[in-house]
Image 1: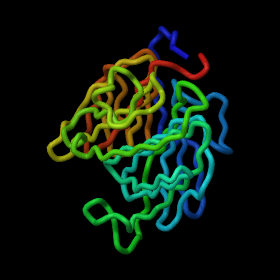
Image 2: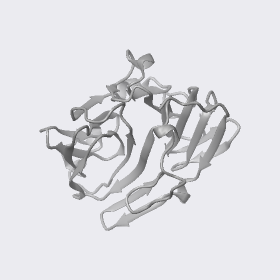
Image 3: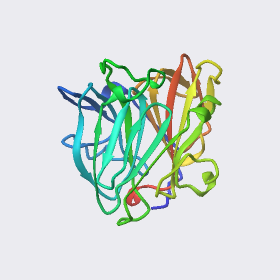
Amino acid sequence: MVSTLTTPHIDVHRGGDRMKTRVAWLDSKHSFSFGEHYDPDNTHHGLLLVNNEDMVRPGAGFDTHPHRDMEIVTWVLSGSLVHQDSLGHSGIIYPGLAQRMSAGTGILHSEKNDSWHLPPEQGGTAEHTDPVHFVQMWVVPDEPGIDPGYQQLEIDTELAAGGLVTVASGLPRYRDRTAIKINSSHSALHVARLAQPGRPTGVDLPEAPYLHLFIAHGEVEMAGIGTLYAGDAVRLTRSGGQRITANQPSEILVWEMHARLGGQ
């Protein structure tokens, strides 16, 4: 899977062009082919297969369903999401909490908008009227058939310090600074909150064979590209080092990948 690409390339994908799934309880936008939405020219970037931005109404969510052989990272932007799985894990995911599920040989799980379980200082509401807004991302593990697993960790303090925070990683270089580990030794997810009180307005992208930059909310300027808005994504190959500067309070998600799926 190790990359052999040598030519730098940058593709901008606007948020409004994403494939969409909309039902009574869910508004989901897909950066790559997902479910019934299939585009043979848009199936992945590097090792990233799924980058779904979901909005789930109160009291609703994804009923118990299966996964296998995938590293699934969920990042909540607002509200709260309750995770339960067939291994007995149960946790509440909220902004500033890193969470990873390794599907491995097979796991069943559900994800529901149960925001009333959180106190107000963590985004909860007694009335349970708020939707939960989150991004779910899937990357390919190093090998199939591993044992399923789950991990979550509060990292709000690290995010408050500013800069790119390594949220999830299997890359050896981030072994001592990553929040949670994923079973993908060629991938790392970084998050930055920019232009918020006491935080910097800009960061530099890492350099890697594959990068995926997603604007979770806000508005930023990317050197050499221009303005990027919430929902926009940039796919980079053999590139990096560009400065990302926020025009307003913003949050960005950056996947750094040193391999690609199936040599494609």
